[in-house]
Image 1 (tube, rainbow, N blue to C red):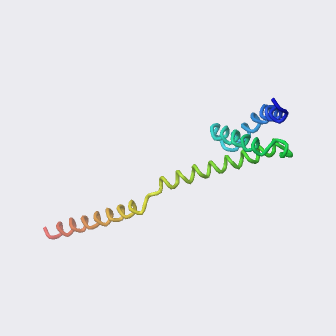
Image 2 (image 1 turned 30 degrees about the vertical axis):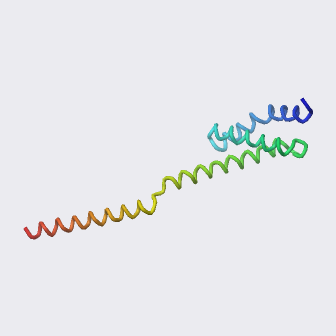
Length: 113
């Protein structure tokens, strides 16, 4: 195991639990927190341990950004999927119009009798 790999292992052992607790406190979703922390470690590894001045702080910032980005994406997807389409709005409007016309016809029919 080379020096940088050993350094990452020590960093991972020290920072992973702390980062996970912090992101769980921020987001309340353990699965999302784990995913964000793991992705932050992958990005940090690609960046290189030597280039990170304060790796723990860097990982926290990156993991938090990932967590918020993923939450926005999830909320946007949910919001878009639950919005009624224009066709649904038109169908509702036409249904209300037909109900009003039917009510008028019933009233006119009752008045003629």
